Image (cartoon, rainbow, N blue to C red; front, side, top):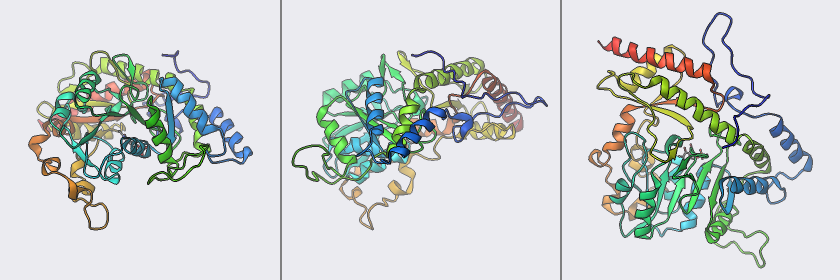
Length: 423
Ligand SMILES: Cc1ncc(COP(=O)(O)O)c(C=O)c1O
């Protein structure tokens, strides 16, 4: 990985004069983002050129070329969002209506809606309660004749254990799509997340490792997937080919040149930003280890977590009230955190639980086999436990030692207070 992320554009937070702890940088504003002169210069170039669409200008192509080169994929296609990156990947594997795509219930709805839009059924696999990731064992329980693909999400930037998943998928002849929206430069077995399966998806949304506000990238080594990915973001119109036609049903999910220019500039800070996130996270884990009832992120052997977020686990049997109680105490101390990450597994959200899709048709759920719609608690002990214990801390590349100090002190204090309040 490249050297430390040091930029004279960065202003670190300092202790205030009255000794109050520094405000934590936030990735929702300039305090926790690395956006500056390089992005402004690139934007000026785009605007003065007058070409704001990627069908005319060079910037989206530049972002695609440089991202592909950085992560070692043969092809990268930029998209309008992480959701459309996943959508493009689902289109690339081209499921028949009613086919099943094995995926996780602990994810963003943007990773699931594209499956339904393509007429396929999300077949939910349980997750490891410590990492929130699907495993070869939980996927194996979901494979069947209708399985068209497996989507593996590297939750919070912590890579799923890919070798046994690839082995299983290979035995069943099913492609693996990686959802690396949260996992830029994470690694498993030395390979970068997003390049291990057949197709990898990334999000450039405001709070991701690098950002264009909204945006996405999808990568592959397979030329036929690459062609379908690119067609799908372009209404299936093959720009530059002889005798073009709209080849299949597709949308406009293009990234604009304004976003492409910002994205290309952001890439320069990616390595350093990830390194800073890892350094701060490791320092916090070292400080929190040994506090009763808390579990720091578990990273598999041979894996490297790139810390989109820092997910602690709080054992409610030791800390009464679990993550909710600690989060309340942290809020009093001015430290933001999200107990449970998402409030419920995806299959409890109305779109899936009540099959609210196209008019009153319930399509494509009408095509599903009953076992694919079995969302009973017994099938998801890992996911339910994970949500019951997760306490997610916002994280970004601007966290430094002083922020880690504050977090370590306040998490210890909040945990102690949560135990006292209960006793
Ligand atoms: C794992 C995962 N997949 C997909 C998405 C969708 O990305 P976007 O919000 O850019 O559409 C997200 C966004 O948060 C995500 O975290």
